[in-house]
Length: 181
Image 1 (cartoon, rainbow, N blue to C red):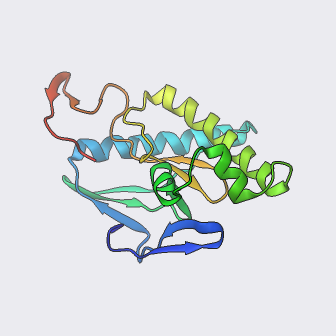
Image 2: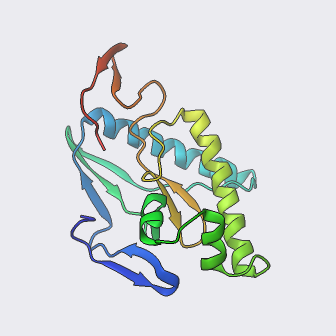
């Protein structure tokens, strides 16, 4: 879907993909969808717990629906770009700190301070989640930056005992010779 969607530039060169749908269809093995759905249930659980406890931690739950043994629907996250996409789209990108100043304004501006607070709260939330779920396969393509400054992790196919290149099925280690992403 991303390949067919027009890339549009909006204010401050923020990049977003215009999608006709609220969901992206993916084809994976059922195990990957089941892990992603389980991870998202845990994201929703921790999101609610941290909110009730008034902790300054941010997670962005989204929907995952298994539709068959080899396909499913994953909700899109609007108004965001991957860190990898951000680096590729801005030829003079040097760091997130410099990007925040160029996009949100001077370090003493309210928009910059709000974005940094959002970034920090989401970084802390996803750091805790990554530790608890033993998230693997974290790279700049799996970490999104929302216009608000929040980080959002996607792609939860490798959690707990599973890791890229290996799947644990019925306590038997299966070597996978190809990558799922």
